[in-house]
Length: 74
Image (cartoon, rainbow, N blue to C red; front, side, top):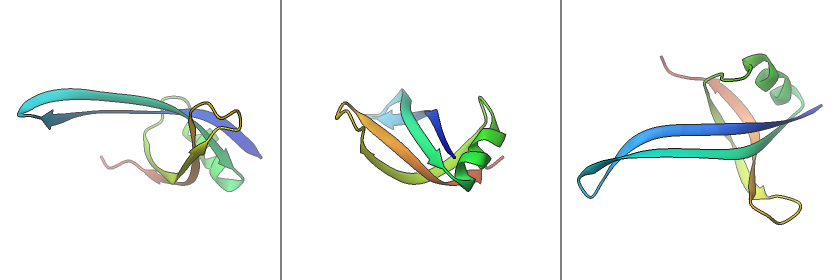
């Protein structure tokens, strides 16, 4: 089983002494047991994702391959 998904990260950092909001959304894929975990997390679920980045097959952009899903810290 493979599951296509979209991962979104948001945070605020300090750059040149001023706060800056950061937002990133990237296409992702999970395979096997990790796909089942991702599906169980559901839309809008919050977790820490580990894996690797690679080029998409069409050569346009990147895709994150999720290999580990960890519960987010409270």
